Length: 461
Image 1 (cartoon, rainbow, N blue to C red):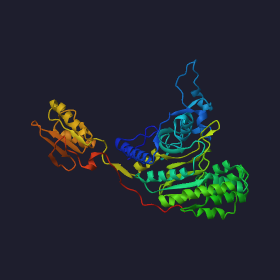
Image 2: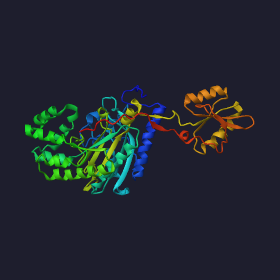
Image 3: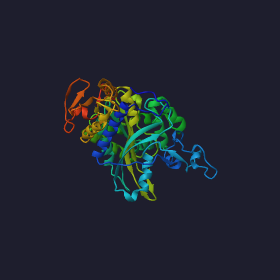
Image 4: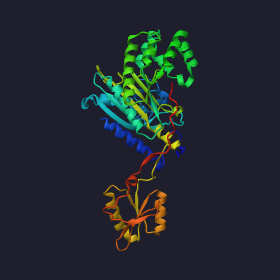
């Protein structure tokens, strides 16, 4: 169903595909708002310095510049390729712009501030299925002023589990770890460059354990025992809190490790009760960006793991600050375009029709256009999406036009003012009053229904 875009990495949808995307977006908005998250929108551009201050992904950032700059304005944006911190660039995610937004608007926000944000982002990646250069993300975050109770880490995971469960997608797993746990463990075995170890462990699924072990030894100076200990930790995966005993069985002690163990235990314990079967403690999850400080999450579709993470994020305690004032936060981001691409390519869901229109008002003569508009206005006043034919062709042609457009009903009015409506799918035609007639509930609005959801594959061990 999904087409290949003419410009690689910048997807465009046909009308029926866009209706599926809108269904996904509307579902996410509804769930987020039910949990009290307020919508915001931030600008599409940030300074390069703002975007790159946490984590190095400069090769993926699109710099912004005019095609021509006059001598009076050399355009800092044009220097983006040189990583000029004052140059402008398109945002590559919504978390970094949100941190800047919180700092600039702190005096107007009530903390803890709960926000959701659904916007386009741009990232210079090699296009492939699930990876686009322009794509839509849907984020939720809670940010505190000075402190943020850990309970929000638990709540965010549960909200996302509820939101994903409402979408026409296969089964999924939130794979959750805690960077305090990982960093404390690495320090406990004598590896002080914890960020470096995390970056290496983050490559585990891409390059395998043997190559990660080699990286740890050659780039970070780890011994064989240290490398193997780090890999043993990354190999722990449980559907309940039994990971705690498995970590302690490795014999490493560290205060930060214990703090992370306790936090991860709380998240998994709550998820087992409130989102059973949806969450996995996975101690290989690291997340590549440096601003994460505690809980980290990646989410995969069961049976579609090769697609990559469809939802990721975590806790960040130091991303947003103003002087001595800190704004710790926790949030998760859903890759909407990645999800919609998979829904369309696998025919997981379809729209009930390709246009919002439920009724086409046919014309008997060209002079009846005004009266047809009156009928359409009455139908629209009751929430029935209606079009009026452009010209008085033969009724057969007008019906064919409606069928081609995917409009299920055609309205006729004879010279005596008598109204009838025809369901062109079944051929049934009946008298109707524009002041009272309503289509069946399943035809009133476009519906997106699940067509095929593959049976859940075995869960990761």
